[in-house]
Length: 194
Image (cartoon, rainbow, N blue to C red):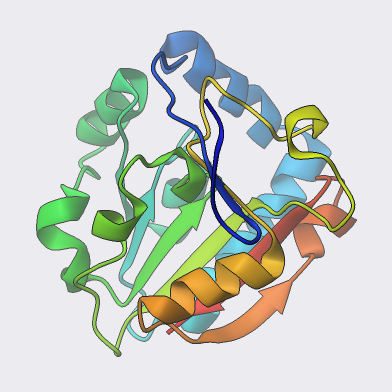
């Protein structure tokens, strides 16, 4: 059952997940598209700009394209993604080593994490967090919205609610962009927090 946590913030208790080889392969196809390459270029630019020493950890790697592009490390729960990371010597246990990286990215992944508070605690002010995620525009109905995915997304936010939520965890929004929407991804915003 969908629960409204606060104004502009909702939670849905996901029970079954589609994370498998087919899910991983879907992201390979998306990454190889013209839009996929442009989105990856934008993400690489941001991560390099906001990483002090080019130490980058990507949480929820999709197909690993971004990790390869920045020569970073990654964490995933999809067994296919974990296998790819291990095979490439790029796997890191995010929950044990997140403070070792000057930039941690959540590209299309933070909304998939059950305990978002736990994922976002333990950082320090020398680290930057980059998040790209679907943001519900004012006036759209959540349950009919393109990004309402009850088999994947635990969390849904409006822009204002997400910034306020991050502020409650002591993160300041230092950059906001709709570039991914401009590149063809409907209602996706990218935030940088410190």
